[in-house]
Every structure is written in structure tokens, then in C-alpha cells.
Image 1 (tube, rainbow, N blue to C red):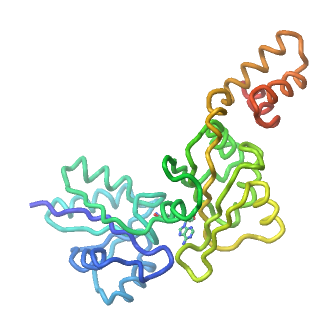
Image 2: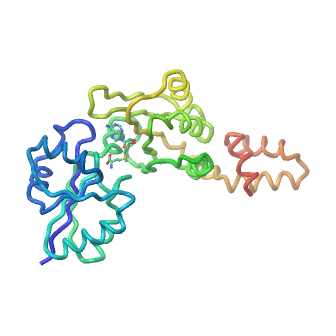
Length: 276
Ligand code: SAM
């Protein structure tokens, strides 16, 4: 009989957040697949659990995934953990879940810590409708394109970010969404220095340009007011610039007017017009 795959979430800063069910699953599994075995070993030592560990991370997931599936099909039960939080959410696991599902293996996700949901719930932003955007690219061009694709997004947006990239990200977000857009910066959640800064993109940029940010962050950005969604896409902007130029306006004036009409930042219209 085939075994099972359990996705076991682990604390994002406070070891006390490990649940009874997670502990039992780790104890009872035949083996644990871990993103970083050294990190998981610390957790297991804290819990007093001794268990066979295999590594499963971004760069070995293809080969390791197959081996894990074989072991489960042979009857073993695997508990998958990442360094912190919920496996498969901006962490290894997504592929393994797919591979197991294709092989007819039962996958069970145990609910538990997730930085995105923890941050959203204390952000003070609307929680009724939200979208998870994960990490933005480190490359400026794709980062901007990602953000521009969200210009008309009315749902609350959740981003993960590393401290050394935060100011660049805030700069791009302020340019694309506008400096006044509300933002909640959720830092070091569940840790000693947990902090939630409810501010705007512009103010946050100023604050962290003066004092380099430290720790782990989740950014919760308010969605656009509903009305913007209907008009404000970069494709619309590019088309309108083209139309105005055909009517005789210079590129500069066409961009200026389009930005005004569509209520978009000028640099966004400029980039859109250049790309088309
Ligand atoms: N799978 C994990 C989860 O469910 O929370 C997320 C893993 S992702 C590789 C790591 C990112 O999550 C960090 O860069 C940061 O954006 C966010 N994060 C993790 N722990 C955090 C914490 N204690 N406080 C704030 N953000 C955190």
C-alpha cells in the first residue's frame, strides 16, 4: 500500500507556534524531506525528535522529487518541511505535490504558520479579497513589468521581500502605484522585534532610505480604487499615446495628456509607450 505526503508548516520565528499535530506528524513520518536539513535539525532537536532527513530544495527538486515519490509508492510516509512557514508557498513543495498527485498519492496539508496570511490579518488593509504576488524579480525590468501588470488590481496585494531589496521595490511600487497608496510593512512577525508599520509607499520609501531596513518583511499594499481598474492598463495607455500622436501631438504631450486622462504616473505611460 502507498504511503502519504504530509506538508508540515513550521514556525516563522516563534518555536512555540509548532502545533501538536505537526509534532505528531514529524514523529510518525518514516522520513522528513527538508529544504535545509541543518535548519530542520534544530527544530527536531527542540522537539526531541530523531528522524531520517533527506534534502529537498530548489536545485535538486527534480531528481529528489522522483526518489521521494518512489519511496512513498513503496509504502513510506514523508513529511515535507521548509525552513519556515508553509511548504509550497514561495518555498519548495509545489512540484512534489504535483508529482505525488499524478502518481495517485494522497497529499495532506496541515494548517499552520504562513507569513503572508499572518501579515494580511494584522495589516489593517481590506482582507475580503486579496492576491498573493510572492517575490518580485531582482531584475529591474521584470520587476517593473510585474508591478505594471497590477496597476488596475483592486484586491489587497501581498508581497514577500528581502531587506536588501526593499528600498528598490518601494521605489518601483511608488512610481507605479503612486506614492500615496496605503501600505502595511509587517516585519519580523512572531519574533521579539515584530513590527507593523501602517503607512504609504512614499513615506515608507523615505523612512527606509534614511534607515536601512533589517529583518524579514511582508508588504501588504492596498488595491487600487475600483474606478482605476477599468481604465488604467498599460496597453490602454500605449494605445492612447499612439492615438494622440496620430492626431498631431508630440510624444511628450501625448504622454502627459494620457497620464492625466488615465490617472497614471507619467513614467508608467512613457515606459508603456516605448514598449509598444
Ligand atoms: N513558505 C513561507 C511561508 O509560508 O511563510 C515563506 C517562505 S519565503 C522563502 C520567505 C519570505 O517570507 C521572507 O523573505 C519574508 O518576506 C517572509 N517571512 C518569513 N518569515 C517572516 C517573518 N517572521 N516576518 C515577516 N516576514 C516573514
